Length: 325
Image (cartoon, rainbow, N blue to C red; front, side, top):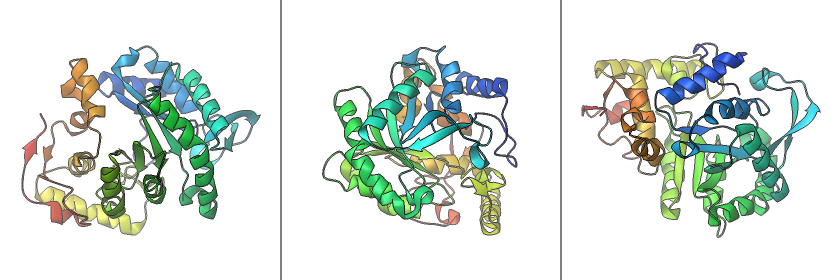
């Protein structure tokens, strides 16, 4: 997936190389120090573009993660849909140990780096593979899980886990007796619009295992920002209506929905805020952390936005106000 600054109503488009590189550079210049990508995004294009910019920076000054489970082949394959404008290369799904090792080696080359901080096992879930996801999860359990756990124990990577758009694979992995993930990326599941399963299932299990969660898609593909997409597809009318309701509540409290959504998705104790702060503190750039960048100039609303699995935004509207410092 190319990096860019597409208008909210046009999430998927052909992003020119110069715009993509400028977007990553702008993120860096504004203090972002955690970057996540995957071979699947544009058949290697996202990794290449990210590596082009980050390779010019001190490697100790940022946190980097990518994913395994899909290999980029040299064979031509015409793309359409989500990755229509990426490389026209065949993608092979493989969660075996050998494929995991190969994927990491190839990602390091595309990213122009000598190490990764976190590695996520990508999309071993029903939304991509239907009922086949269980057999692929089993392949990963006997392959990728063991490889990544060994790399973690050897200190080659700082952590590993699942990178998925559903809660079930993370739950299943956390219930395992051995080779359990230390940090997982839960996309689209922990936001103001959708958080019940995460709060009821992922968070308690992660806390019991001492694992952490990286929140992906806190705005649900831009829906919470007024965009036309929700979880990588066109926004359904009922979700658009829900966003309209949330905006009305936010307006009555004098806050932006953007600020409330970001604060909610980063406030839970299991969200690794060190990704935002540790590098920034080391480089004297704490005031430009990812969270404060997103919320600068916005009034916040919640004293404790994770108190229970409540689905209504109004339940969190306690009237408590704070300022980003």
